[in-house]
Image 1 (cartoon, rainbow, N blue to C red):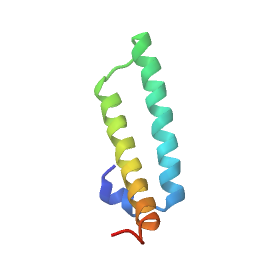
Image 2 (image 1 turned 90 degrees about the horizontal axis):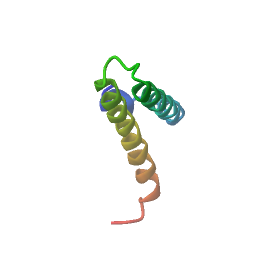
Image 3 (image 1 turned 90 degrees about the vertical axis):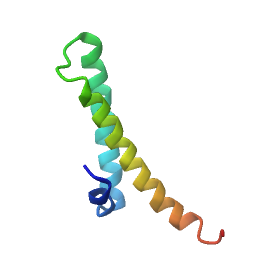
Image 4 (image 1 turned 135 degrees about the horizontal axis):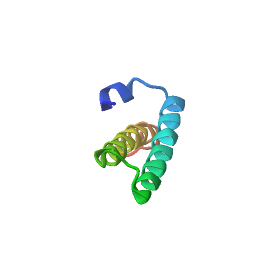
Length: 70
């Protein structure tokens, strides 16, 4: 999912996406540890997608928290 698409989502949707990606990363880690993971790149893609979601969340929270700062 692209950052542009994420910026169009609501805060609640972003929080849900973040939870989903964290769970996915956890399960992928378990599958990797047991040798059942077909594509190791899936872990990397999921971590990057989570980072995108968290970046958009941080941008939105920062714009509301730092209005009085230069």
